[in-house]
Image (cartoon, rainbow, N blue to C red; front, side, top):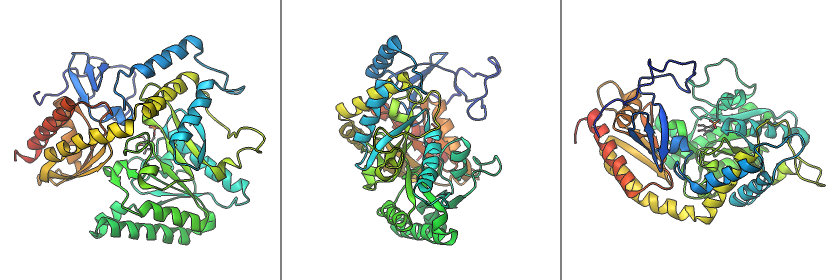
Length: 440
Ligand SMILES: Cc1ncc(COP(=O)(O)O)c(C=O)c1O
């Protein structure tokens, strides 16, 4: 493939009223169809997707069991009145998700997307403390540079300054530094940075007043820091700190969940169970908007009087709708019955060395399961702060999709990535890096 811009620019030929997800650029592609791990634009040019959409299409773009489940459900009932009951898929999906999750997470609130899941977790945290006589707890701790979504609550706990530019957010949002930020500031090894960052979290809690804090929400692997992986023992320390101060620990597993880190959830990979766990993205394989909050036992216990199922309102009109839950149920069954953790481990064994070979000394690879970050070295031409964007663009021009921002890249290949796909990513990324850093 050659280093050309996408062959089918949308602008200005197709000027329309559509408001883009991100600022429009001349690289915006009009995707028309997809097969396996490859998307095609209207000129028929292929783009190998090494990001799974955006951590979503983990079974590829033509997953027959999920398609069949939605189609079958579409013929039976596309929607059910949500104020008067639910549908069988929703019940089965909640069971399947809690079975897949670590023990202790016993109920699931189904929603339409990751931001809604985070929003529900924040409300659940406040609700729980009120219900247990601790109404003074309303603050939420989260990372600077974390990302939790685009609704007002989830945006408030998001700590990336260029994302949170909409004025004051939710009252009581307090940001803390993540281990990799501490590592950057102080130049200390990861395990030491983990200990220091955990100490800083506890100092912040003490300074804010533990009795005012409802929850701490963290991503086990921080997406917008270029997949910064929690150092050994760090999440366990957070668990202890939260327990010591009566604070709920919330994991945002919207990226890390559903097999990405090798286990069903990062909670299992790291051996730490949160009180609330937000999951989304891959759980419908990209076939329908779907996400969930998995709820710990002690919180579930205040959501009902024990005589029937638990409930937590208000909800969303389309939450747990039969089509989305059909997709989710098929995806979870496929994941479980298809022995995906084993397949992911086998794929990672092939993909990680290929990625390391492409990157070489031009960056540091972070790898966990089939989730990768590359912290890029400064190319020395004054573009160090945006080198991630440049590399990602050079890959797109060569027909490979990954994400690049600041000085990092992230990749999340589908669980059905072939040997040939892996080789294409290796070759393309090598060429893109050669273009920017000069050939090795
Ligand atoms: C870690 C994390 N949390 C939450 C969200 C929000 O999810 P959604 O875009 O589905 O609302 C995202 C989206 O990228 C995310 O990466």
